[in-house]
Image (cartoon, rainbow, N blue to C red; front, side, top):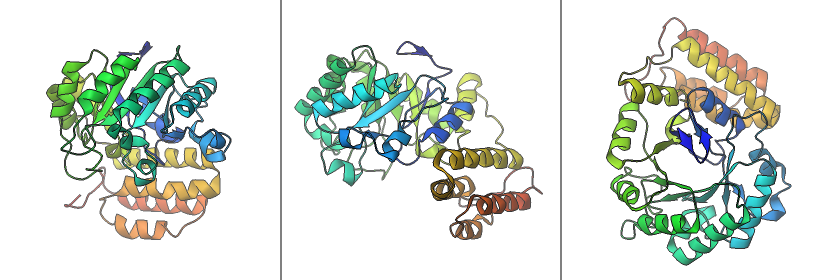
Amino acid sequence: MNFLGYTLRNNLFVAPMAGVTDRPFRQLCKKLGAGLAVSEMVTSNSLLYGSAKTRRRANHDGEVEPISVQIAGADPRMMGEAARYNVDEGAQIIDINMGCPAKKVCNVMAGSALMKDEALVAQILTAVVEAVPNTPVTLKFRTGWNREHRNAPAIARIAEDCGVRAIAIHGRTRADQYMGEAEYDTIALVKTLVKIPVIANGDIATPQKAKFVLEHTGADGLMIGRAAQGKPWLFREIAHYLKTGTLLAAPGTAEIHAILRGHLADLYEFYGEDTGAKIARKHISWYTKGIVGAAKFRQAMNQLTTMDAQLGATDEFFSAQAANEQIEYEEAA
């Protein structure tokens, strides 16, 4: 896929997720089939540029290009400065967050809260596009503020008029948070109204659903977030299905163990052992969700504070699973 002047292996995008899409996760998803991965959002507050957390979020050392960095904020001038800063740090695409529904973001009128103020949206988009004239700017947003105000079509046209080069739309409103089911009719409508690429997002958890959403919306690509947590191989499964119409065999016990172990090693190296062990817990929980006997394992894992202890417990758990070539899942999973 040609996207903003870059050749991607396919049209599957890793959604930016705070606390999840760090460099280790982005690299893993790209390795397992994703065409592009967007970083977790970084602040537009210049006072925080030097913080360890912000600099770590913007760390793309050794990552497969193109490098897409998401910025968040509500002040046009500061957003422009943040865009310039991140381009100077190596960003090749600047993505603007108008999709996050988290209260701590929306309470300061950032994220999806911005969709309430279309004039401010235009000011922010213009400021960012003008700040980095040689760098493509993209925008992620939702279908609207609430179900009575699905103004994604208006936001999409504003974005195109301001020079935004591509948009990603989550099929829920701000008020929906992550409840209920995503709807794709609004995304399909937006696709008919703009000429720039439209990426569909929301509840894409299987290859079959991916095919349905692409066909229903006419979107140029798909963005996948929560469904890839603990299942980064979902990208290769979807890519295979879209290309061949057949389902790829699920990874076996040994491969899942190897992928998780490699992911943990990258997390420990990236964050250091102490923080790495804390971050690792949620990933281990996602990888083992629904596996027979995993609830007790996760309970014990949450008490472990060192790299060696976590790796040892993980190896022991998967060794117990190794009698089965395929992982055995609980019926409700």
